[in-house]
Each structure stands twice: as C-alpha cells, then as structure tokens.
Length: 93
Length: 416
Ligand SMILES: Cc1cc2nc3c(=O)[nH]c(=O)nc-3n(C[C@H](O)[C@H](O)[C@H](O)COP(=O)(O)OP(=O)(O)OC[C@H]3O[C@@H](n4cnc5c(N)ncnc54)[C@H](O)[C@@H]3O)c2cc1C
Ligand SMILES: [Zn+2]
Image (tube, rainbow over all chains, first blue to last red; front, side, top):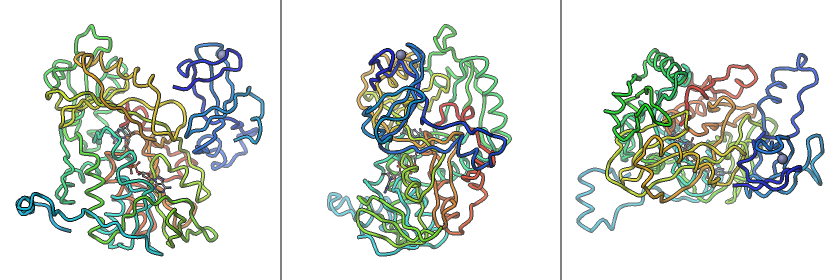
C-alpha cells in the first residue's frame, strides 16, 4: 500500500484516497471546433509511462481535496506532491 | 517435432525419461526476418504459430525480454468463456472458445482445457435484470448461456452460500457450460513448440528497446541482442503495450495497472466449476492440485510493478468468505500480480496503426487469456494480409475517434 502525503492533512494510507489518473490534461477551450482525432486525444489517449508519472489524487476520507503527485510507476516512489493549478516542481516528469 | 503420444511415453520410459528431445530450439537472432513479434506471451506465440500454419510465413522471430509465459500468460486465473454482451466481442471470443475446444489435438500438447462451466452470480435486482438481458443477447449470438435459480445454483455448486440471509444474497446466475479453465503455461509452451516446429525462431532474454522507422515505415527493431531488420513489427506486449507503442511514436488509450491473484493451501475437491461475481469482484476455481485460485480487482493507480497492495486482497477475501464460508479456515499460500493493459471500453486493440508495418495487439486488460487462440488467429491474418480480418476489424485503434466503442465494462462484470 502507498503512503501519500496530502498537502493539507499530511501522510495517510492509500486507502483514504481516490485516484484521478494522469494530471495536467486541460479540457479543450472550444470543444465544438475540435476534430474527432483531437477529441479522442483529450478523452482517451494517455502517456502511461513506465517511470515518473504526474497524476491526481483526492483525499476522499479526509479533506476531500484534489492535488497532484509525481510517482514512479515502476518503483512506486513518490517524489513530489503539489497543489492543483501548480506546475510540477523541477523538470516535471 | 517429436510427436507426443502413448508410444513416445512408453519409448521414453525405457530410459527413465532421460532423453526427451528439447521442446523448442533457442537460436541466435538472425539479421532479418519477415515479421518480428514483440512479446512471448500466449498471444505473441499464438500469432507466430498461425502466421506459419495459416499463412505459410515462417521467417518470424518472437522476441521475449524474459522467459516464455513469465508475463500475464502464467499469472492469470485461466478463466475461459465467451459470454460477452456485444456482437463484436461474441464473435472473437467464441471463435477463440472453438479453437480452445480442439487446441490440445491441434498442438499435440495437453493444454488441459476443462469445460467445467462458468457461473456468473447476481446479487440484487439490478444484477438480475442485467444478467437476463445478457443471457438473451448471448444466446441470440449463438453462444450458450442459461439461467440458474438459487436452488439450481445450490445443486450445481453446493459450497456457495445461497442463504437469503447472506451478506451477498444470490438471486440467480448465468451458466456457460462450454466455459472453464486451461493450464496457463502449457498454452505458451504448446504454441511455442508448434511454432518452432514450423520454423519460427523463439528468442528469450531479448528485450526490444527501439523501433526503427524510415518515414512512416517500420524497418527494424533494436534489441538487447542487436539490431534486427524487418518490414513488419507486431507488438503483443500486454502490460507494456504503451511502452512499445511509444517506441514507434504512438500514444494509446491504454493504462497499465497491477492485477493480483492468490491460491489457498490444497484441499480435497470442493469446486468443480468456475464462480464469478461482478458485484463483489471475485472469481474462484480449484486447481488440479486442490488449491483454490482466487482473483481480485485491479489496484486503482497506474503501475508497471508486478506487485500490488494488501488492501486489494483484503477486500477480495472479505467477499470470498461471505460467498464461500469454508474458505475462512484456509491458509493462503502464494500471492502475485501481473501488469494489465486496460482500454477505456475494456475491449482490446487488434489491428494496424498509423505507422506502416507496425501492428498492435494489446489492451486485453484483465481478460485476455481466454482470447489467446482467437486473438493470435485474427492477428496473424492482419499481419499476413496487411488488413484486418472481419473478426478484429471492430477492434481497430480508430474506434476511439469514430466513437464506435465496444463497451464491455458492464457486460463482462469482473471482466475476466
Ligand atoms: C492476476 C491476473 C488474472 C487474470 N485472470 C484472467 C482470467 O481468468 N481469464 C482471462 O481470460 N484473462 C485473465 N487475465 C488477463 C490475461 O492474463 C492477459 O490478458 C493475457 O495473458 C495477455 O496476453 P499475453 O498472454 O500475450 O501476455 P503476457 O504473457 O504478459 O505477454 C507479453 C510479453 O511481452 C513481453 N514484453 C514486454 N515488453 C517487451 C519488450 N520491450 N521486448 C520484448 N518482450 C517484451 C513480456 O515480458 C511478456 O512476456 C488475468 C491477468 C492477471 C494479471
Ligand atoms: Zn487531506
């Protein structure tokens, strides 16, 4: 089980959190003008890297707030936690 | 290939079974092949076999970074069934089931396919309505499926807790009698042996690290054992499908997650069928050695580690004990996980890609073992003819932009 540090509540067990998948996917500003391919890109295509991954978590059994995490998908090591709207620290992923 | 039979058994008994021939060669990689297959799991090996057998293409290499069957092939709970909701799924999974029915003879290798039936349980009114709808849809597609009442379920599988007072009351079930189990690694070995006999090179400990392209065309692969030239590269890398696709510059609608299973200590035969419950997310069968084999759900987060959290098993065990009270007194012996590649519609991607000569067979997620023969069969056709077979045409990558998704989430329940 992961131990995740909520930016507001501190370190807690993974079971207190909901996972929100890849972070920093912006909703297209003008969906009506998108091609089907661009819409598919937004909705479905994912980086799914083996290594550092920027992802969203929500502290469901605590403060119920969303935040971002950088976690390695092979070692499960968490190397950054930062708030929604913030850029990933350092070189990103 | 030395044929296995009662006579070869007797012949080899004379010298204490010390001189059985090797099951497949371990050749050095050649400089070039007509087709290079990435991934020596069941699907990759089946693809190689049907390329040789159905299409006469034998200049084929299967490159496996570890050992045959070290991936999900031999990590899965081996449930085989074809009771899927949508027509497209019914067609490819039932093709597969038909191939399973003759597979041991076809490969001259006992894959121990046992049609012991697969039960899918309904625990509430919604489940029950959904189950009835599915049974009807499945039968309309010519696939066998029947409804069992709680009393019939109790007679068919006595160790299930069918008491109306149970935490998860059982209101009904669907039964596919043609479904069942097979021996996982025998499937990899059987296809490997039969493909090798037709001239396919099976190369283990050989990881593909890059895909070489000229313009939009594939020209070769880079591996830990050198560069191999080829005009056709077929990715059959299961949990690593996104990683391999990225080598060809493609992004896919796939995310990788750990999926785990565990086995109990061996006990006397108590369960002669497969039981699945979509609602509480468990699936159980008993191995020939007597162990109960139980599978859980995926861990929520993306992962390429072949391990997963204890809380996922705890959740599963809590449900299993409610369904099968006798399990509460069993010790669990081994636990493991595989990395499964999941598409948003829980259906696979099998077909061509925007990169010429690069083919993908992946996204089978938590339920691709059952599809091994049919998937390899249709994929081999696609590679040989450079166009999909009608069986896998609906499973093209384009469905994510056309919107023709094949949504099997609800249909598959636990999706194995
Ligand atoms: C716990 C668990 C339970 C499951 N239960 C069921 C079930 O009951 N019924 C069912 O139908 N399905 C089930 N599945 C799903 C099923 O196992 C998979 O869908 C299926 O096995 C995937 O196809 P495969 O056998 O070819 O994969 P794999 O055996 O994983 O083959 C892929 C191979 O590609 C290799 N590879 C990856 N990258 C590279 C590279 N760069 N170079 C060279 N080689 C590479 C890997 O080492 C691996 O051997 C389950 C899976 C798990 C993990
Ligand atoms: Zn919190």
